[in-house]
Image (cartoon, rainbow, N blue to C red; front, side, top):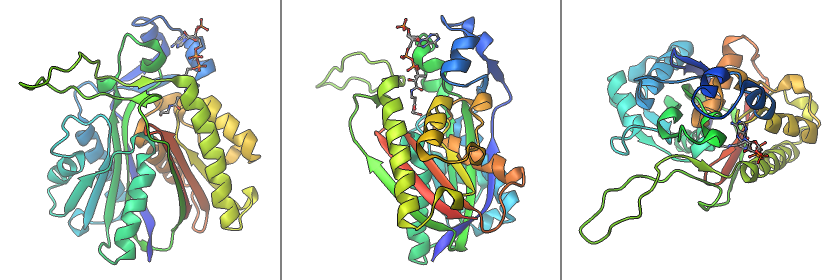
Amino acid sequence: MSFNIAGTGMYVPEKVITNDDLAQIVDTNDEWIRKRVGIHERHISVDETAAQMGFQAAQRALDNAGVDKNELDLILAATVSGETVSPSTACMIQHYLGVDCMAYDINAACSAFIFLLETAAGYFARGKAKKVLVVGTERMSRILDWDDRSTCVIFGDGAGAAVLTPGEGYQDSVFRVAGGDDVINIPQFIGKSPWFTPEPIKPYIHMEGQETFKFAVNSITSDITKIMERNGLTPEDIDHVVLHQANRRIIDFAISRLKMDAEKFHVNIQHYGNTSSASVPIALDELNRQGRLKKGDRIILSAFGGGLASASCLIQW
Ligand code: UT7
């Protein structure tokens, strides 16, 4: 037994920041950001935490699934931008929902939503859970260096969630981890101890953009090809591809390398930027709410990012 996605939800904070707004803060311009990344605007949290945004998305996913929150057996959450390491963001979402079930976080940066699905699949396989809530939520604006134009223009805040129920919808997955801190890292501020005085650090996201770009294009194209091949599927058999929204040019490379119909790729980076672990569930929720997912549709989800890690999965709706 695996699971079906019974419902989805998303939440983004109200404040919208355009590229022109950013040009007031750092040396950048609307043309560069649109052309090199594909972003027009992003939502930025003024005072909402990652857990609060995740809670909003979770409620919408529960409503969409028609599942009572008290039926939940497990909440899994992912974030790299939560306010606290402990309690976990999942524990805070559980607290806001006012429910009594197991809850914990998984850290796999931008590809984490698919790691959450894979973890949930184990609970369904062992018959340990019947209703699971998975949430990717990010307040990236908190961990950006707003003096660094190579990172601060590409991220946004938001949350996406899904409710999982027993079924055979989650069919296959591929994961890749190339561990190391040289391409992407987000150092954590730790105070000095009596025995050790750390070097001062900037607790912001550091990213080698071009290295990440290459990793992204290579991993998503080979992971998606692998999933199709081992399930006896051709690009024509896939109805939708939901890629992590990190750069419009990465999506375009994937479309041309995979020789797939561009219409099958849902693209929303222009409105949200890169929302890390929230990116895939936000895009999935948009497709769902637009009524574009039909029963039996084959969907590939694919993401990549810090770790380095990438993850792809095949879902039948
Ligand atoms: O979610 C985690 C996964 N993340 C990703 O997948 C991100 C992957 N990487 C990327 O999307 C791209 O590498 C970036 C968007 C981060 C950067 O784009 P790029 O085309 O790789 O630019 P670049 O770093 O090669 O820089 C090209 C030029 C440089 O100027 P010079 O040296 O050619 O004069 C940069 O200084 O663009 C300049 N530049 C900017 N100019 C205006 C860099 N950032 C900006 C900016 N505005 N915001």
